[in-house]
Image (tube, rainbow, N blue to C red; front, side, top):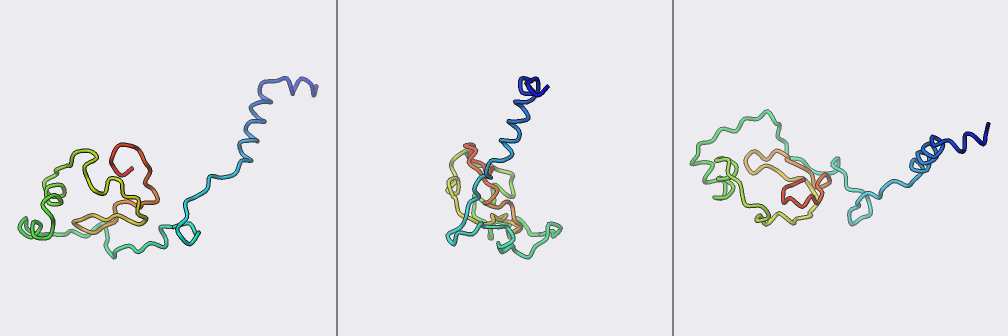
Length: 118
């Protein structure tokens, strides 16, 4: 009976599952102090997603650069791979130019090769 279990294909799958479950976890990135950077330690602006910022177009134009205004207020876009922040690998949280709400954390970004924050 025991010999039959070892010759069964299911035995190989069960063994493979246990071997895979015993592997070491992937190392997580750390900051210069050797500790893992965590979103809990990042400073977040005191804003809420429910705030409604009302400004005239003239006010927005005076607050934003021409490119920021075109992209955020006129629904424009930029050519792929053209932005200076395309290859930025700084740690932290990136914020909206208009309302200063957090958009994404660098901890969740990966190199997708598309030029967009992924």
